Image (cartoon, rainbow, N blue to C red):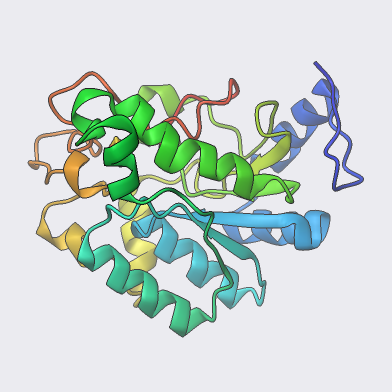
Length: 245
Ligand code: SF4
């Protein structure tokens, strides 16, 4: 269904979405970010989960001289290393952090029972990530995230620019055609600080109760919700993509 971004002049139509996806596919990540900043201005935001892609994106935006609001979906269940890295990146790059309010873990225990993530992780993710993101994205017209096509088969169809009917905004994926090695190369060559958990076997990092290290022979995201059939936290399940954070 055609709609419009309420904040911007870039009116959505299926034809425009198709044209942008086609025309912008060949743009390098830096040029795509510049295009997005020029097109969406202050209505552009970035979400960070403080994994390796987050480090790469905040550095790249800084190098380009672009100031973009950073939405942090802090579930209050992150690793200490993640919070410490977050604080260092905020200070180094002068990030404007947007932190949607969520209920505390203690309140969640009272309302939903203890350790909801063990009994109903989808509901836990909805309370702690999905609903807060929906609120946080409301003022924006475009959302940058660091997801990549190679992370899972369900992400293979990502476009560099695509419309999200669920969030009513444009999604920007500068690393859609990058692989894990390329992210690492960018971080190393530019000497960018990254989450130290990556050096401890955590190739993908989320909340403490739902993240374990991965073995070298496992998929990148095998340590997320291991032992269950849950693959996605749900924030990216918007009909146009089916990938998680
Ligand atoms: S990843 Fe686990 S602990 Fe974090 S919000 Fe989802 S279910 Fe809850």
